Image 1 (spheres, helix red, strand yellow):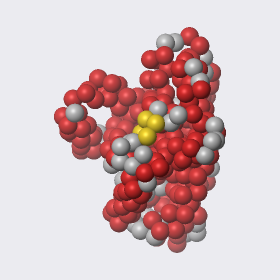
Image 2 (tube, rainbow, N blue to C red):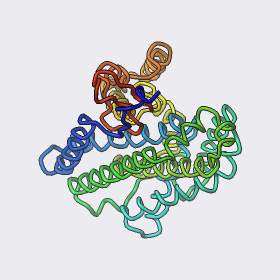
Image 3 (tube, helix red, strand yellow):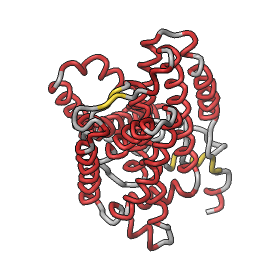
Length: 342
């Protein structure tokens, strides 16, 4: 027994992951300079990409790590957008309204968690969808928010177009980095292993002392806050919003697609999935219903034939994790013999 265990060490990071973290920091710093050197179209497109990334990371945290398969996160996307509209109508500056509506989305998620977290499995999924539909109907009935015809955000008219795009871009990039860091830290701690235990078997996790309800509450509120931020930033990027669109279930389809394609239950997967979805949408979004059918077919294909997503192709072949949230059991005597525990 001793001869087997001697020499084996547990590592959280590798040379590749340290290089990747350094490269990510350099990339973030370079991205902050984009509005100063790139065209207006590039700035707006990258803002959309960051919003997709926020949505993918939030849904992956819920379903991939916590086992909370929600099809109603559009409730918080819509709430964030219309919360911003409501606050600007009260005279609050637009970007301050974005921050406040993001926090309000987190408060709403905390309140709704008292209801939806009592549900499990398909009941939870349907329950979250019902909540989103109810919120969408309430907005349609409120004529001060534009009713069913939609409404524009007006406070941003005081900014020059290039300045508005730059501020929106920087705010979106900052929110993306903060949310990625929060999810990374959450998963790197013991809470990450606890959440995966809840995902695999909630009752078994509770029986060994995992605090199931507080962890699910934390994860659900974080996802609600992140999706609220995505909705508010979508509004500032497009300047116009309609309830049928912002509360539409297509957002859940987009999030599921990005996570399935990238890699469910991995940290790097949603980043890859968001980039893939961004490229596909730019190329084929004008195809209407055929575009949505194509997304569904691709997602079904990945679920059937590559359930661990695109990231598994690279991580399995190269045996690397660029942003590891798990552990690696490594033998210094036999570097080629190693295995990864997620």
